[in-house]
Structure formats: C-alpha cells, structure tokens
Length: 82
Image 1 (cartoon, helix red, strand yellow):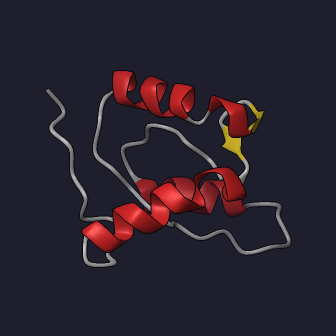
Image 2 (cartoon, one colour):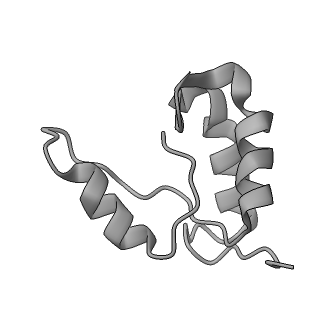
C-alpha cells in the first residue's frame, strides 16, 4: 500500500506499475494537502514497511469503512484542501 500526495492518481498508478510483475490497483483516493498526507502516515505509522509503503492488513479496515461510507467509489471521497 502506498500513501502519498499526487495530482494525478491514475498516472502515479502507472508509474508504480512499471517494472512490477503484479498488477497494482487504486483502492482509495482522497483529496487533501501535504498536512493530510503527513497525518495519514502518522496514523498508520505502526503499519509502515518502508517510506510511503504500508502493510495492507494494517489499513484495510480504514479503506473498507471509507469505501462503505462513500458508496464504494474509490475516488469520490473528497476532503477540503483548506
């Protein structure tokens, strides 16, 4: 799992996929700020593997709950960027 701030999630997904045998998938995209990214990384710090990569098992409940609250669409949940 990668937690990071990007302008174009689909483009970043293609970049992450390059050179990997397994297909990557966008599970959740949330509009936010650098501070939001930092807060998410702190929130899930105990599940960090390295850098911006986190163990899926550690954050899957957050992803499932967020998707359920958002009708299952991984890209419509938006937070104010203010």
